[in-house]
Image (tube, rainbow, N blue to C red; front, side, top):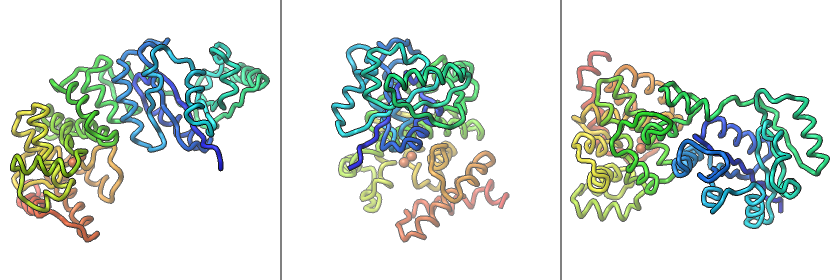
Length: 397
Ligand SMILES: [Fe+2]
Ligand SMILES: [Fe+2]
C-alpha cells in the first residue's frame, strides 16, 4: 500500500490569509499530498503575535473550511513550551508511522534552515517543499539548497508565481480600514467583530457570540455565519437598513443549524414555535425558528426585528421587513457560497434593489426545488407572490 503523504504548514497565521491557503493548495497538488496540517504557533512561540492564540486558531479553522484536505492542528498551540519543528515531526511520525512527511517552507525560510534545532534529525524526517517568495537572491538560494542536499536533505521546489502577500501588510490595511482582497471574507469579518488589529468593533456582544458560535457550529457553518454577518452589513448600508442589526441577525441566523433535529423538535414543541408537521420534520425548515428562540434565550438577543429576520431567513415571509430581506438575501449570496445558476445576476441585482434581488433568488430556489421533485414550503411561494405586489417590483418589471 502506498504511504500516506502528509504536508505540514506552520506559522503564526496572524491572521491567516489567502497566500497561506494558496501555498497549502499548491503544495497539496504539486506533491500529491493526501492532506495537509496547518499548525498555528502558540502564544509562547519565539515570534510574538498581535492576536491571541485562540483568535488565530478560530480564524485558521474558518479558513480551512474552504478545502477538506486542509486540517487545522492544535499541536503547537497546546504544547506546554515552544515546539521545535523536530518535536512536531517526531510526534507526527509516531502518530502516522506509515506516512511520508512534507514540510512546507518559503524560499526565504530555506536560507535560515541551517539555524534549525537538531537539523540532521529534521532532514531525516521530512521532505522540504519550497514555495517561491519574492526578493530571494537566486545565487544564495541555489548555494544553500545544494549545501542542504549534500547533508541529506530532500527538497522539492514548487514552480509557481511567488506569492507576495504578508500578514504584516494585511494587519496594516485592517487597522487603516483599507480593503483586504487577500483575506478570506469570514476571516476579515472575524477581525471586525472581535475588534482585532485596530479595527473598531461595532456589535456590542460579538466577542461572546463568536466564541459560542464557534463551539456550536461546524467550521463551514461558522465561516458562513461570519460571512453572512459582513455581507448583511454591506447590503444594509446600501439599502438604508440598520447595518448593526443586519450584522447581528446575519451572525446569529444559523445559530441552531447544527443542533440535532430531535433536540430542535423538543425545543419547538415545548415552546410552541410551530405545529406545522413539514417544518417540524426538516432541519432546513426548522432551524430558523429554533434559531430565533436560541438567539433570544441563549444569546440574549432581545430585538424583535433581529429575531424576525432570523425566523424567516430560509423561506422568506409575506410582509417581511427589509432587514429580514437583507439577511435572507445575504444568506444565499454571501461571498463563500458555492456557485449556482443565478448567483451573479442576484448579486448584481442586490446592489440595485433588495426586493427584486430577493424575488430573483426565491424564484431560483423554487424552480430548483420543484425541478428536483422536492418539497417547496408554501411560505416561499407566498413570499414570491407578495414580493410581486410591491411597487418596487411592479414598476420595474
Ligand atoms: Fe439557515
Ligand atoms: Fe445560512
